[in-house]
Image (cartoon, rainbow, N blue to C red):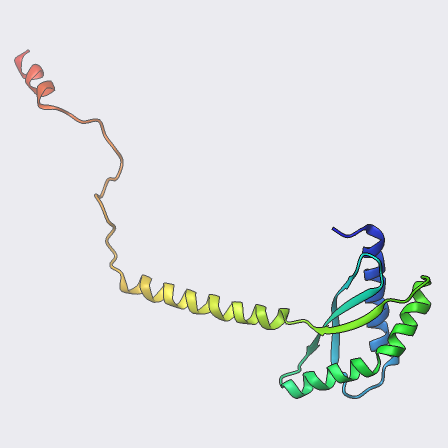
Length: 151
């Protein structure tokens, strides 16, 4: 678990980078970039910034966005250093977040499993296994019947 100070720095870096990408970076290769998470090391020397690109269907678009972020890294780092006000500015590393693709893959797997379950449910019979009345009842033995008959 990271310290509260490191978490505050990470949250602040996330806001600063998102504002920079929205307002100051004018590279046409940057599409609709969303900063999803920022992780900062315990000594606040390195920051890893995770991002997703909305509507990037091909690998070429993702590579173009990654190249644009790498070229703007110096400008973003200087703005982060200025707004953080710390003694040292953390080095920035941009990593494409694969979470949306993973979630989409899991959704596909779950949809296939549901379709298979529905197919199995449709092919099975409508009768239930076991007796019509599944509850246990006390047993009646022949000895009890014999004693009742004698009286």
